[in-house]
Picture 1 (cartoon, helix red, strand yellow):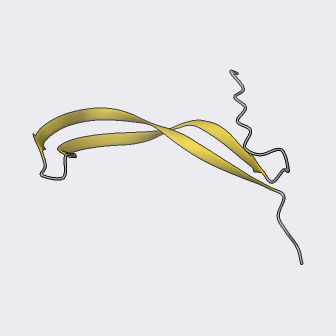
Picture 2 (cartoon, rainbow, N blue to C red; picture 1 turned 45 degrees about the horizontal axis):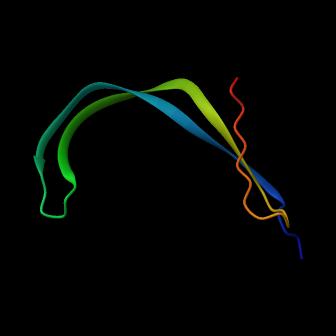
Picture 3 (cartoon, rainbow, N blue to C red; picture 1 turned 90 degrees about the horizontal axis):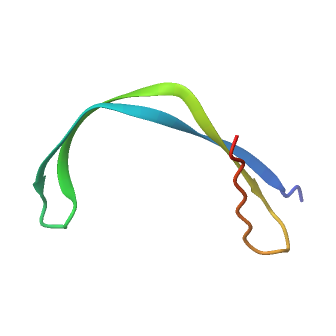
Length: 61
């Protein structure tokens, strides 16, 4: 059996060019209008399978 020990994911940034809260919905979320653009800026997320429990590390670079 081949168990994957790590996985690398990327979380890309976006810029809201327009954002408007229209109203509050009955489910307590808000109805919005938005125009956004993704940009070439991202966070790298590395998930590792370890026996030490959940560990979160952040690189400030």
